Structure formats: structure tokens, C-alpha cells
Length: 170
Ligand SMILES: [Fe+2]
Ligand SMILES: [Fe+2]
Image (cartoon, rainbow, N blue to C red):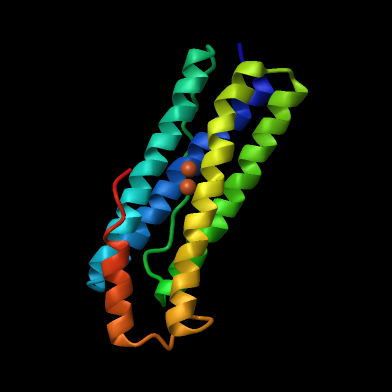
């Protein structure tokens, strides 16, 4: 059985994961409109992963006889001025999620909720990967187009778009 405190925090996480899916879908739509189809594809896959994350939390709440509470999902922007601004928005959200997962683990440890600790371990590892991938996108764009990515040539942007389109659907 989950404590009320843990149940509330887990529900908040369900919302944050769906928010991430919204954010990545919006980024994907924006890239798609600009014919950056590889980048659009990358964020589309990322959005699907976030829905899977949300469902893992949903299932954990259910399996522990908690109550799933689906709060409204906050609106996300529909346009980013540059690819770099979209990449950075993604990293900022991943960093926020990492902080939330760490806070969930703190609650689980404090309450000696071993089942939640075991469940959260996967997310602790996953966030290392998520932040590293979000940072790699920024690094590649910086390499090709400077700090804000704005001096990227058309040819390099095309190559980066192609590379990001090769992301597997793991
Ligand atoms: Fe996630
Ligand atoms: Fe994520």
C-alpha cells in the first residue's frame, strides 16, 4: 500500500511524463512544419517513450492499490525560433524530471517503501540516458553552428537532420 504522500508524488510524476510527451510532440510538429523530418522523427519517438514512462507510473500506482488521479496537462508552446531553443527546452524539462525522480526516491527511502525504491531505480538510470541524449543534441548543433546554433550552414543542418532521423525506435 502506498502512503498518501507517495501516491500524490507518483501522480504528479504521471502528469510530468505526459507533459514531456506533449512537449516533444509539439517540438516534433514544429520541426515537421519546417521540413526537418529527421528531427521531427526523433522527437516523435521521444514523445512515445514519455507516454510509456507515464504508464509505468500509472501501473505502479494501480499495483500498489493507490488511486490514479489524472490532472490537466499544462499547455506547451507550438513554435520554437531555432532548433537550439527546442533542444534546450527538452534538456531543461529532462533536468526537472531528474530532480522529481530523485525527490520520489527520497520519499521512498524515508518511508522504507522498498517496492517503490526498486521501481524507481529504472528511472534513475533512464534519466542519466535522457539527459545525456538531450545534451548530445545540443553539443552537435553547437559544434556545427556555434553557441546558439544560428551560424549552421544549410548543408550541415541537412546532415544533422538526417543523422537524427536514424535514431532507432528503442
Ligand atoms: Fe520520462
Ligand atoms: Fe524523458
